[in-house]
Amino acid sequence: MKLEVYLFISPTCGLCPLVEQRLLGVIEKNKLPIKIKKVDITKIPETSKKYDVVVCPTLVFPDFMKIGGVCDQVLLEELILNYYVNSYSFHQGSVRSIPAH
Image 1 (cartoon, one colour):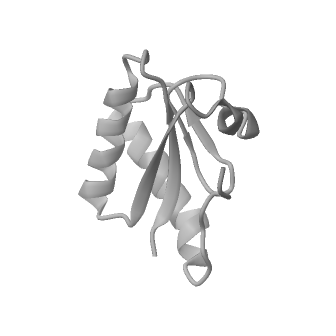
Image 2 (image 1 turned 90 degrees about the horizontal axis):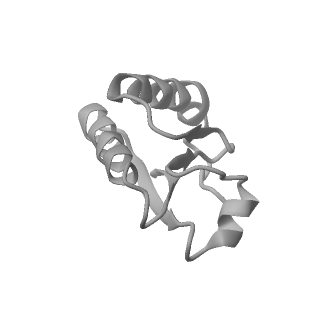
Image 3 (image 1 turned 180 degrees about the vertical axis):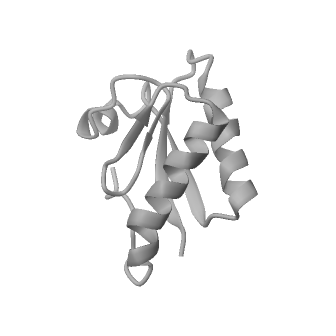
């Protein structure tokens, strides 16, 4: 089972690819079972409103924890690993995904 994380992006966001690359690096390095679902805020604005996303890029986790904007690889890794250990790993028997948009 994979943890589903939304990555809110915009086609005009110059930093979105950087954050996606860093996120993929964290997932690969730590061999985390995380699935990224990219959401283009220009195509699905109602999903952005539903999760109160006001900046791109933003990561939204199943319990609605958010990481907005750009942070360095080390901080991103620390936040994701802390989330994974403290929230997700204790609920592996249940489905941990964000409700469909």
